[in-house]
Image (cartoon, rainbow, N blue to C red; front, side, top):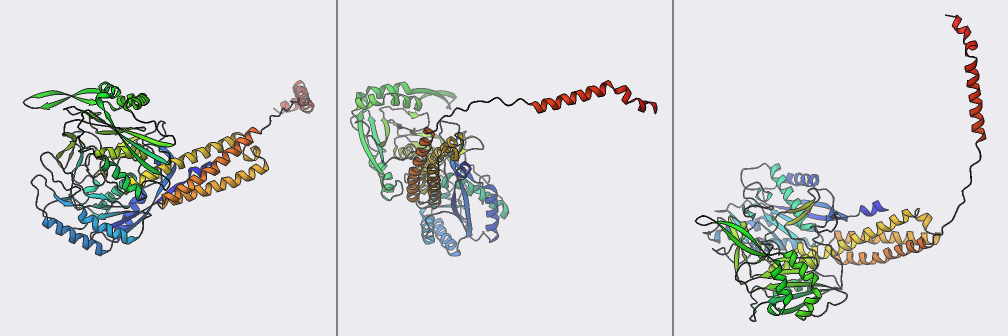
Length: 606
């Protein structure tokens, strides 16, 4: 029974559409072969874990469908892209032409709707063969790059619906840490996103790079790891606590209505919550000068670091930052006192409350969390900070330019942090690797429509975040059901098995409950495979009743076990064995005593 529980796996349907005349019919079988040889069934993973186990009890397996798109889609995309390229002026600040992503996305979205399927994920690989006058990439905002702003261009887009498109002809682009660090997407032909650039490649080499790219998208976007385990609650409450130092509060860059709207729109469309769930936002304003705990927490959390800069000569500059872990510890230890001092009401019973602390400090220097972050998500809270300084140069670069961080713009970082703490959604640049036994950093998918990472300014949610938000609740509940069922089976084995522990009537009920429990788990897994999260939620919640009944049966039976004392009886004396041994001993003694007489005739022969 235990092995059957551990073998539960969610089949994930993934449709690959190859768009462009450069793909042939032989590409389908070759790409399928590459993917099937590289993809193995795996388990859903958990990045943040208090134990050494980062794998959940339930697995997932990839079910592929690779096909060529109709030629009409390719020609429509080529015409639209060629028109956009011819009408776009060259940029003096970037070697790449900036093309709005909507040029391609509107056409892909209509084609996806024509497929009339919402229970699988589509990945469109574009290789249109368009020859532009200079390299191009896609912009995701209306702002152009300037001396104080970097518009990070990319080559992909994740849609609101379950599709993703990648243009192999765009780029090459590069983004990631500027000086050192993991997750760099390098310029050149060494990354699968740049597979169509550089030296001419054979079809087999190109498809091998595409298989690597698709597998990475599957791991990060289709079956992303959980940031933290999240348990279901009927009411989700986000407390937006604005701790400001001045009387005149500047709301620019911190529009609570925009933050709430990012979640309300998806919740109202039924794409973020379950049917009986509710989401509440409560706002509180706290004066920093009147909050002694606030000033104490900030002063105790300030640390300093030195940096070397080359002006006329090398100069050491001392800068400050906030230690997020110490700030979190102080706020956690003083939570009740903080609520009393700040005048916040007590937390409501029966709901999950996530406090979001925003420190709006009257400092005229840069003060970030752990040197790099505007906002950090913890299991029980979100902490964010900003000062009077408008922007700073970050340690990241995009397409040869440093990325500027707008330190007073907190809306997008807060949306990403709330997603992590309330729904356990993992950032698009983090992935747990069981091979490395650590968290890997890869910024490949951190452009476009994502609230995570330093390279995108889009605050809206794609299908990646919306699916992960609801799936994480289900995976946490399903993992708990499986581990609880395994515990009760091990308890039965410890008592000698179900036939010895349970009476006949109890055993019949146990078998009925167990088969019903397994049936509901199978239905939940099937619903997860079809992205029918409401149906999966129904079967998981229904299976909890059967699991509770099984626990109750085993507990009742274990309490009814009666101890019995069986007296030990001495075994009978082994007369037969003793007599046989004595006869054998006497026979050997007789032969030994008469050995000269017995063997005399044989000696005479010699």
